[in-house]
Image (cartoon, rainbow, N blue to C red):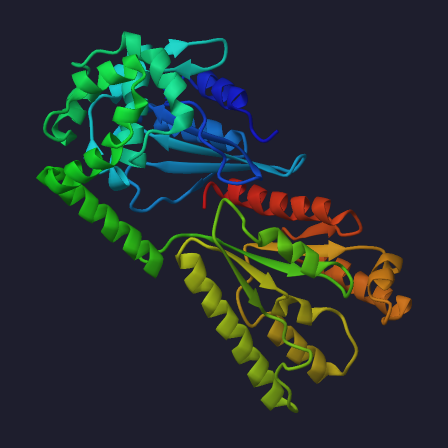
Length: 410
């Protein structure tokens, strides 16, 4: 299921990366996500870790304004599941990682190696998890109490992360008292402390943390505006009538890895520009460019842009004289190609069963034209749309994610 943490561990170890899993697995980000892991990697080994993760099919997504966080996602076509990794090279806590520490090197030096995983020593594990709850989550998660109780006997109040927590504690509190209450299992007393520590730290955070927080907010704001430009990815979904484009488009509803922008770019049909000669051509060319510009702006924000139809399919072989063929060619090349071209394909009989109002012979001609189009476009993917919708959706996502992985990132 998905890309297992054991596979990630083997790849990182083979690349001689110093790493560890920061805490027990987080709750999945959605029903399609089977792995959500937080990993600490030595800064000097980050390049090697990147190469190892790319070799497993992971794609790095931008995380502007999230401090040193780097989010990696992988999609497994066999079961339709996603795996998410949050990779950091330093330990930072609080909103947007504004409270930074120098404890990462020590935690990596003391890490424990199991049969397949590298995990923090018990004392490190205790303070890593506690600070995550108190400063990041601002609540003591029920699921974390067993792990905190297990590691508390090894913890001390003079640990570097405990000293980092001390200034954030309200009057009358401190790492030693918190440690005693965890050892005693007095969660009722500790429960109200988490939001109090968050508010106290927010009110008295040091100047450096304030500046870091402000910088991260600016980075996130620039990203929402598309500045500086993020790469994103654009996809065109094409196919004859009855190929199942509507079902395939459902693939992108609630996608956990990236935000999606869907843009319809069909140039013919009911409600679309009409006119004779140059008038109709100009209107369709303007419509194509309007959709392309909207897609570029969405890509600048790091979105996955999905074009439902595209001017490319206008250039399919068809009837008409030389002028008609020239107009189709010009419209088909009016805007730049998308990054990924997906052409849905199914036998004419299957297409006719889905769209009985169409003649089988006409659908067979449509299919042949789309097959020829896919063959003429370098890198286009011909996808078997006669399979079950879930399998078609997996194939669509796999083709997109493989293209992003080949490109080396989002």
